[in-house]
Amino acid sequence: MSKLAIFIKSSRHIIYLFSLLSLILSGCVTTSKYQALQTEYDSLNTLHISVNQEKNELQEVNRQLDAEVDELKSNSVELTSQYENQIQASQTMINDLTEEADTKTMQINLLKGALKVNLVEKIMFESGSANVTKEGKERLTRIAPVLKEAKDKEIHIVGHCDKLPPGAELSKKYRTNWELSTARAIAIMRVLHWGFNIDPRRMVAMGVAHYRPLDMEIEKKISEKNRAVEIFLAIPRNGVRHK
Image 1 (tube, one colour):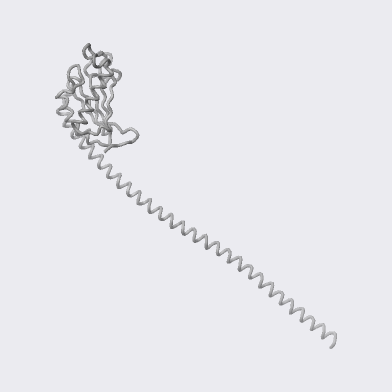
Image 2: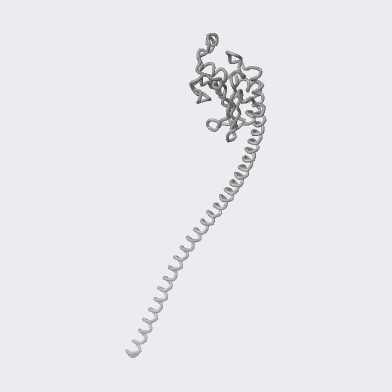
């Protein structure tokens, strides 16, 4: 065999091996790319599933929030209606009471749904005592239904006195106007509880003597306007309400 033939045959083997090596290397690169793409696909697919899950959870939360909002709106409408009905009923009764009341002995006001009543001492109590008179109980009969109906409010009963200290006989039982004004407030509270079954947990009785005069213009004078019991509705302390 000639040298030329041997050289040609050897060259063919080299070309074949080079081609085979190229194919092998090409196959390795393709497999590596495939594996990388597969890994990226799996990662994206996992992320897609997670996002869809979060989306579904958020949609469920949104549905729940919508339901709560609808319920709150419904409750708001109902409460507003109840409040307006209560105000209207209270206003009607206040108007009726005002027509009957002697403004010199009983003053009735309704401000922002709050009832406020001032009852003059000489009508409400026996002379020189904290005993409620028959006429005083009759006055309480007129206002007690309004007080009882306002279950979302506290009833504050405040006893007032003028600057004159208790007389000789009265001072044997009530040493100062503190005791007298407090005793009269408590007496009103007893009537409202025992006579009209108003929850005592809703009521607060206190005496302020002559230190919080109802009529500031005549504070320095002795006036029956400052010898009175004040009854008013107030927002419950700490938001506590009693049915």
